[in-house]
Image (cartoon, rainbow, N blue to C red; front, side):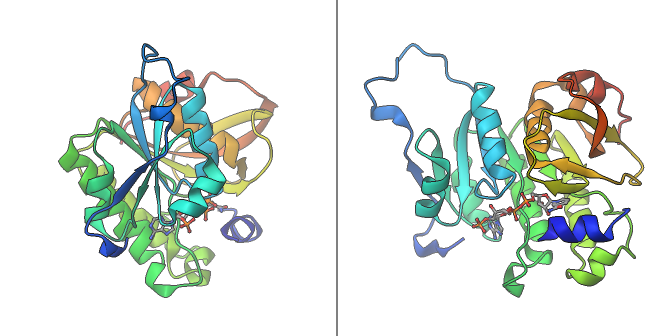
Length: 263
Ligand SMILES: NC(=O)c1ccc[n+]([C@@H]2O[C@H](COP(=O)([O-])OP(=O)(O)OC[C@H]3O[C@@H](n4cnc5c(N)ncnc54)[C@H](OP(=O)(O)O)[C@@H]3O)[C@@H](O)[C@H]2O)c1
C-alpha cells in the first residue's frame, strides 16, 4: 500500500498474556539430522519478519550463514509463512519487555517493521517511532553489536505528501532514526525508495546521501543490503538512501558502503 503511494506520489506485544515474550523454538535442535559439529552463525533478531521485506531478510540471513529469530505478533501465522528453520519470539514492538525477552543470545537486530493503516493504535507514532525506540534501547541494554533499521527516503521532508496521507509517517520514521543515531549502538540506517516485489539481483543498487533520491528498489535487494550491513565494517554508523539503478547487477556492496560519508 505504502509502496504504491510512495511511488505514485513521491519524487521524493501482548500480552503479557504471558508476562514475557514466548520464545518458541521451532528450529531443528531436536532433529537428529543436524550435525552437532556444524558451526553456528550469529543469531539475528528480525523485527517485521512476517512483512514483505522481512521474508527476504530471513532468507538472505540464512543464505549468509546466520541463525534467525523472527520477532512476530502471531507465531502460527509466522511459522506458516517462514517455516521451521528459524526460531520465533512472540512480541510487539510497542511492548518493550517483549523485546528484552526476545534478545537472549542475539548479536544484532534487523528492523523492517512498518505501521499499518487499519489500527490507529498501531500507527507510525507507535510503531515507526515508538517501536524503533523500544528496539534500539533494548539492543543497547543487551549489548548488541549492530542495529539495522529500514527507514524511508524522504524522511527529512516534513511537507512530503506521504505525511499528509499517512499520519506523518515520514516524520515519525525520522524520529525513529534519531533515536537510533543517538542511542550509542553501532547502526546502519537504510532509506529505501519505493519498494516493489521484483526478483532482485537484476540491476545495480544505488546508494545516495542527502535525502533527494527518487526511484524504486526491489524488496529482495533491500534485504540483501540489510544483511550486507552486518558484514562490512564500512556500513557502521551510516545513513543512506537506496534505490535501484539502470546498470547491470553487481554484488560489490562493500565498495558502495565505503563510499558513504559518516553521520
Ligand atoms: N512500501 C514502500 O514503498 C516503502 C518505501 C520506503 C520505506 N518503506 C519501509 O520499508 C519497511 C518494510 O516495508 P514492507 O512493505 O516490507 O513492510 P510490511 O510488509 O508492511 O511489513 C511490516 C511488518 O511490520 C510488522 N509490525 C507492524 N506492527 C508491529 C508491531 N506493533 N509489533 C511488531 N511487528 C509489527 C508487521 O507484522 P504483522 O505481520 O504482525 O502485521 C510486518 O511484519 C517499512 O518500514 C516501510 O515503512 C516502505
